[in-house]
Length: 228
Image (cartoon, rainbow, N blue to C red; front, side, top):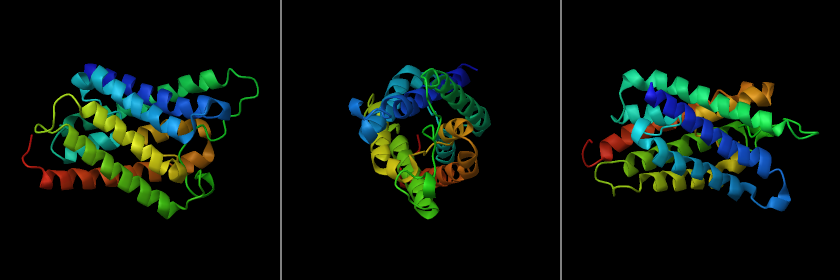
């Protein structure tokens, strides 16, 4: 239960910090955070939680991460579904807090609410195939970073920094394509508030990250110098 509470809080923070920066701060050009600021915000949520709850739950904050770690032999399958449930609920709670804050401003419109999408709902107008490839590849690389940085032979104490910077880089690359998911819990939380189109396209932001995570788990298990 302690692990699940930690995952709930961590995913709440990821959504509130990352999506909150997009909904609250990036909406005002004069603040100057833009895509780069939002990318950094997502990375910072992971860095801060890695050191806050990493020793409790492993700081997955993402169903795709939990699945990739399981495939890679780093996570007990009996904990997989409870972790995913805690992450999705934590994400929804974070989005709910963000919604309550955002709607406190007169004239606020929910709009996209930092949801993920493709075609007309892609920030750069990229089609479904581009979105699918992007989410698979970016999640694959994210899991490779995680599996490598947390390996027993990796330098100690730096995993959180590497993973947080990895997520920042992923956002810098892919925000224009899909608004960057690589995390089904994050996508689900925002889709609930964004409305029908986000719910209709949500399937891609579950399927693609999970495919990428599975490939990464299998490949890293093969190339790893030894199992942890």
